[in-house]
Image (cartoon, rainbow, N blue to C red; front, side):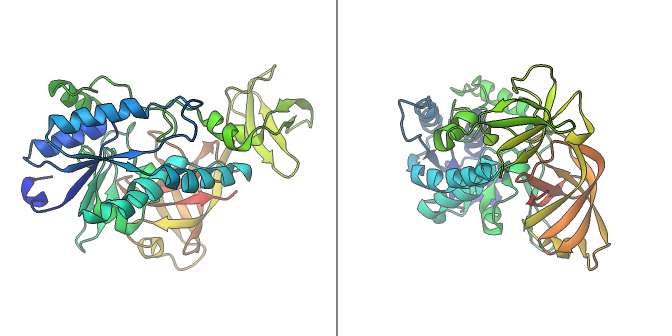
Length: 369
């Protein structure tokens, strides 16, 4: 990112109040650029009931914008978030699936609703994501991984549209987290030592289970040991559990692993022991694949069902990239053949596909076991 590359560009920065997006503003300021900053306001429907940190976030964002002489505007996307992201999440969990609200938040809110309200006036929208981009020989823009494997957030960006990627800018994507912290401390940013947010984007201190309980309530049902058919307890709702879960079960005689959900009969199936075989999968289908830059069928050049294409993938936000091959089924559907058995593969999860060197992110689709 150089001054010459950005000269004359209209730049918007999504400033959250966290240290990452604050260092983004610094990165522009050191080039002599003072972009317009925007704080996206997403609040719970009942502020007293929900412990939300948005007031503190806004104070931090205001202080950083003022420090670097940037305008800060608050954009209210409350209705869009609760109508779109929450609706998506609740429909999925009610169906027994494992959705990722943060993935859809980037697509629908940060690069979606914001663009409709204000972002369309700008050439570039900069965020504090740990991700990078590169332009290939054909002039196409690719989403690429960050050098920090723990903080890399390309998996959260793998559902954005091509037009959104073309406008996206990730000024700290080439750093690792420690470097960002060091910059923030050296520049005496107000949030230099502030802890990273945990949990769902925009929900502050609200836990995921509380978020679900607020909309779906509880629906008790039997917990059955898969191998024996023995009833070992009662769950409060299938939506409070994920495939592969091994903590917070609350049943005696463990450890227990969630291995299956029977949504029709409201039964949670578990296996007993340490890493039971039933908790792992090596081959699984992925559908509705969303390509980021180039259609997957063009990249893979797969023409027959038996063809294979080497990739790496993730099914959750972890530092590891798993090697695999893809078996072609249709332009948006394929089977992932993982080189190793994967723990906790669950329908509804996004499977994010990268090239064999886990450098370029090719896109993502939904696991449909």
